Length: 563
Image (cartoon, rainbow, N blue to C red; front, side):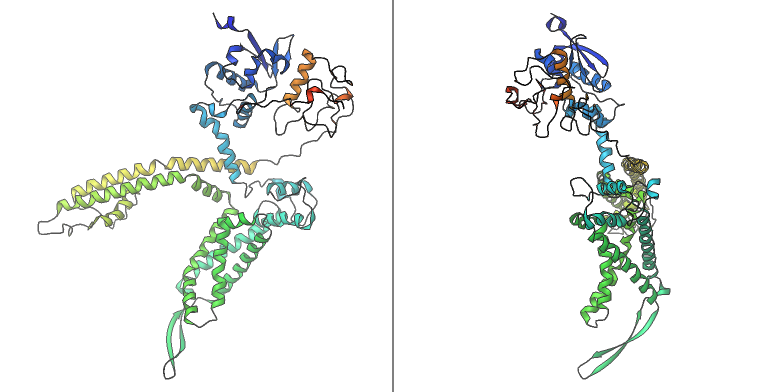
């Protein structure tokens, strides 16, 4: 017998598009929403139109065509013209596991999650510098409550249930934190960012000038030493940095200290603040200056040794250059690219290490071929005395640097050198495109987020009056974060099923028949439980046998409640 003889056809209307299939086709994936349509009692659980003999679902019709085809062929493919979150939401509605997506479409399906993760990685330093922000007032202005609330939510600083700051500390903490952390939060935050950028550049310039001999004159110094029979004067010469450079560095350190303390005090999460690498760099760059100032007045040998060590570790001041990542999008993109391309960098290092080891060994033995008979070590005529020395030559050759201090002098060594250069070009060229693609992806996402307009406050309609068709709709019946109808799809389908197909007469004493949506009996009282009797749509005070059990029975693992 054919398929049409085994089961009757079924018509499913999804978003105005009618689809026809067989009930046996829908039974191929048990436990899903479409599989329940093939059951005999499906008319009482879904929105069924007896006149058109069809089931109606207010969902995306284009995505449903791919889902229905999954029941027919057993292969779930992802459409390229549908955004990932929408497709993910449709799969969840129809009760299909996302792991059923075919491998050929898995990367397409995962693109939206990768983009969301990349956008979330920029959440610590918002990039939106729209024209509205340019006109925003500083921390002392309290006129724009909506912008303040948005900034508080964005920085995750509000602990109150309604999300509004309350009290002096809760009011000023997000403002001052954004003043020093987010350069694009207000006009005054930009001023603070410019000041911080100025002191960073001055500090780095001072650090570089301190190494110039013109600013380190040689001075004659004397030192009195205690000897066995008395004292002894010792004369010595020492390079001493100009005093004005020390004063300039002191002013910069005072600003960095003030900025660091303000960020520590008003930080909403001290643990995350300590874990941040940029904050660790700030502390490490500030600490040596105060230690050097505190120990400069001591004359003991231990203090002098510590001062000598602190002068050596002055190089940590150059790490302040990484603070520029707070102010420039490109630097943040570069940092995210390096972190995202860790596997590619490790692969590149492994390839180079293998090539260096192989070609350093080959060049060593290739150069020994042309050794003179009277040369017992076979290395007097070549630069490659041993294999470790060949590592340097292999590195500069594979990276196409060609330093020139070491080069082969025999025909066999030249052949090895040519192979080493070609292998280096191919080795470096393989992972570089992946790194470039990562940079392009992060940069495009950063630019998109920077140009993303602020979301306007949604219009909240007035609550419906008594007798309105929307009077029964409440927070209980409304979905959250849904792109579909403004009422719960399951509850709405149950109501339509009862209105169209009819239901058994109500056995409750106060409700002889199912009320309509306009009936005042459909009032949702504040104390009314969520397990509402959807068979009779009654809110009677007497005991209803349909309220004695849950409307949604216990579902097996991995399945959704029917309807």
